[in-house]
Amino acid sequence: MKRGLVIGKFMPVHKGHLALINFALTQCDQLIVSMSYTLKDPISKDLRFMWLNEILGYKPSIKVAMSLDDFDNETLSLIERTKIWARFIENRFPKIDVVISSEEYGSPFANHLGASSVLFDLLRCQVPISATKIREQPDKYWEFIPDLIRPYFSSVDR
Image (cartoon, rainbow, N blue to C red):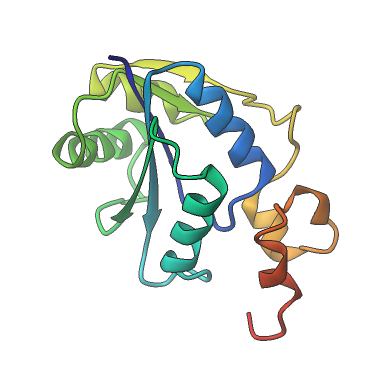
């Protein structure tokens, strides 16, 4: 069985994330979607975790997991950061065979895990969006927000 990994904050989950996850499913038999969070995140970890589980439909080939990110050090080089991430993942999950990502970290991260790396839409041509853009201007990027998540951005009490 080939096990894949997608990591992210999913803050919020958007159509680019979903395209990545759907692509990742074609690359492995079992997919772990690891949602990281910190205690200072602007969107609740529980809400994001619920969104992921509801949108992904509790598919048996997908395991959605939540992981406290209290170990990353953004002052380190990408190589050093991804070594730390890999140690965390190795202790948290079964052996990963392939890392699927849309970010530059994918290759070094996979290398530290002893896994292959598959990049998806690195230049964001297929789904030109980021969660940061959505948080900053949800109305401008409404089309990229899944229906389940839209009420969050319609709410006055975000």
